[in-house]
Amino acid sequence: MTQAPKIAFVGAGSTVFAKNLLGDILSFPELAGADIRLFDINQQRLDVTEQVTWRVAQAVGAKPTVVNTTDRARALDGADFVINMIQVGGYEPATVTDFEVPKKYGLRQTIADTLGIGGIMRGLRTIPVLAEMSRDMERLCPGTLHLNYVNPMAMNVWGLARLSPRIATVGLCHSVQGTAAELAHDLGLPVEEIDYLCAGINHMAFYLKFEHRGEDLYPRLLEIAESGRAPEWNRVRYEMLRRLGYFVTESSEHFSEYTPYFIKRDRPDLIERFGVPLDEYPRRCVSQIGGWEELRARLQDPNEPLEVKPSVEYGSLIVHSVMTGQPRVVYGNVMNSPQGGSGKLISNLPDECCVEVPCLVDRQGIQPTRIGRIPPQLAALMATNINVQALTVEALLTGNREHIYHAAMLDPHTSAELDLDQIWALTDDLLRAHGDFIPQGLQAAD
Image 1 (cartoon, rainbow, N blue to C red):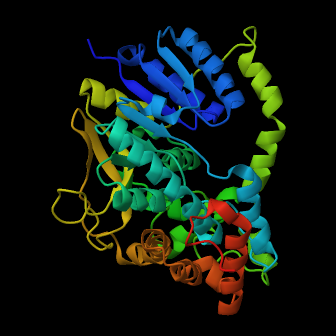
Image 2: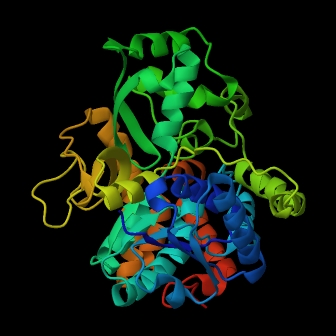
């Protein structure tokens, strides 16, 4: 009999995401008796998630133990797994600030949570909180496996590797498996019949192989791109396929702001031609916030059917494989030169960066796959993003505020739109607007 795992959900007030992961985890018979610890700083949202947890358990016939707490130490104490899904600063004021301040300079964004000036600011306010939490893990659950779902993914994993290397952390995203399903749909094929190999950095990994029963599917994908049949919402990625020869994992709205090619304030024709959804993330947030009360009522209503179906997230698969020994391959975000390893996972990317690669998971935990060299044009494009990540992490590690400005000046989208004086002034304005969300020493100069 597999021992019931102790699983801490950090940021459990993200009720819908927690519900999906709980449904996945509790649906495994070996995990049905899991010790679930729900932690959040918002007691009201936490109470809703607890009610939903019991409803999920009932729906799948599970009998977990559940703790609802605003005491982080209580949630982490002895945890085998820590699933992290926090958002430091929330939609208001932090996300609103990340969008509205740059607009004053004519700098428009779509998601702003991974790279760009918005991603830099999110990294500055998030990594210190994750590091503080990780130090708690070192004290309370040193053998835990930390499953991080928090963006900016690469910066966060990189920062934790430097600030808290004793805690095993893997960053998890759904872009690899999600995009594979999208491409399978475009080709009219069942995704479960697709064989692929993917590697790169989070939100900028590329399918090095994409096949169906031994047939290379890239000629068919290129035909879609060349014929103009790409879905309207996915034109950016199909255009990049034409230019690079490989398809990228993250969505077109994300990818459009990782490069200097698609969002230009003096080229509205580009925005229209490629269907770039400016201010997309705030729109989603406003919609979710507006619909929360109705959704909450449905989730809590015992007379309202609660649908529990498998999600595409890797979290439950990792927990199950570590607990039972059943081997699986997932895509994880880890450091390019793993501790105790020899050589790099992706040989033509820097030693010290976070990469997204296939990983074997079993009782031994996360075991990344060594990829070797990737096509040089892909490595070169990734380097433009890695530079920004590196400087943001360096600013936090050294307390050198100048590196924040350096990160902004090297960001592909920001530097394509603004001159150096504007970049410095914008960075000052954002640091000032975020106030105490930014660590002391990096806050705006008086």
